[in-house]
Length: 127
Image (cartoon, rainbow, N blue to C red; front, side):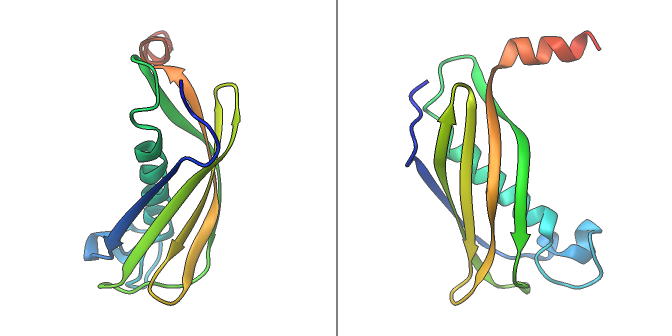
């Protein structure tokens, strides 16, 4: 594993109808849904560590802190930036920011754990 603080990744999306709260069921207004914002931020963390893990390793989400600060209607362009801020053994902590052209839309932290994919899946099979 070659992970160190400072590792960054970015995603740029345009809010589509599939991303809005009314479509996802998390609200009744046609703006970027909070669960979708979180999924995009997590996607960026996965993208950040891709290529930095050993063969057979993956990472799984374990903890999230999210502040959804501003509404984003369909057609908005949102940039999500994640940065690895802490590496403690297998535990990875990312900070993230989501911005449109003028506004901070959301921010938070995502913790992930590096795991052996086969062992992780094997434990599921025994439950």
